[in-house]
Length: 220
Image (spheres, rainbow, N blue to C red):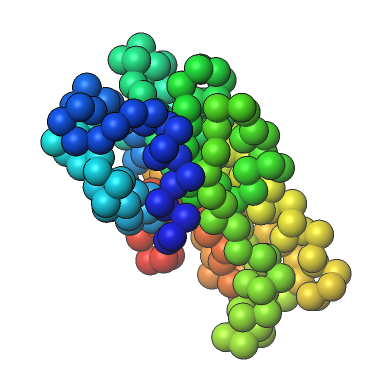
């Protein structure tokens, strides 16, 4: 998590810490109730506190939109309207929404599978990737179970999750399996999924929708 010292701080908050920076505001977009994002955010808060931007030096406005396009857009618009000094975004959808809404406010992102591939590129955006090579995942999976069918839960509206599915399908011939695509648009859609007898393993993509329904998927 050293990357969470975030290239960001010097240029993004652009000014001295402590009492002189009491008017600094950090806007955060963190989709839904997702443990991974929450843990990354804790690391971020700890990192900026070490840089002198603790609660006394900078206010934080947290937006936790539902994992769907309009909510991501509205969250970004609210923070832009609040004239925050920096936008922190977790996941590709939140990041892309922020990039669309502002070219002037610095954006620091995390939790993206492949920032370049999904178009998370702008002069005011910087951050870190959470990409784990799909080949490594498949190799480790083979040590756990013999598989010929892998189900993948993803949201077609989230480009980084779609990217994962594409990479998985490209490896079918090399690793000898078939991909079963299981798209979900809302967390509650998971209740309609069925894996038993249909798949040997399940890949939960980086999709915000899928991860918000993580417990339900595991119980399946």
